Image (cartoon, rainbow, N blue to C red; front, side, top):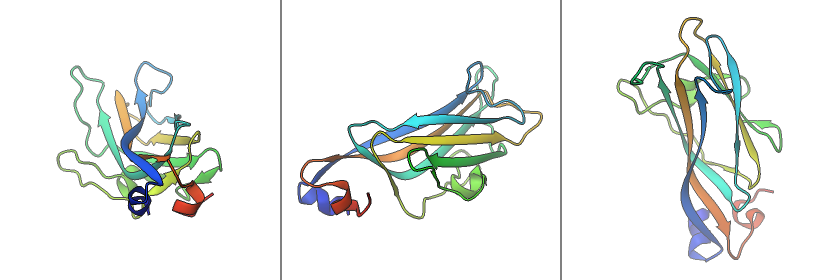
Length: 159
């Protein structure tokens, strides 16, 4: 849909990444057995189409090192509509995978659109009672959609 709309000069698309971070020493720190929500504000200038999600978990060591396979549960909610993208918290490897050594990346079965000025509420639950990661980054990789001649409903068939 986006390709056809770009060729018809109805939209302009630009690669973009939104991220949520859980960082030790801040209010978003993901301690042992903790559950923490981080909100991602989608810019008001454009809609965003998510094509892929990636997760990186780092230790608190200096220098930080990757913690492969750290047990985390994930919930993602579109705050504007309250629509959850999962029916219950999911193990991050079920829906994200990883490009880190000895891990396997995962693909979304279908890209999803997040409307401008919306919020993605991202909740992680640390299932470990002994290890608190120093930093966790979850990236939403996709593209911004700027409407130049069309609108969201006629192009993507959503409200």
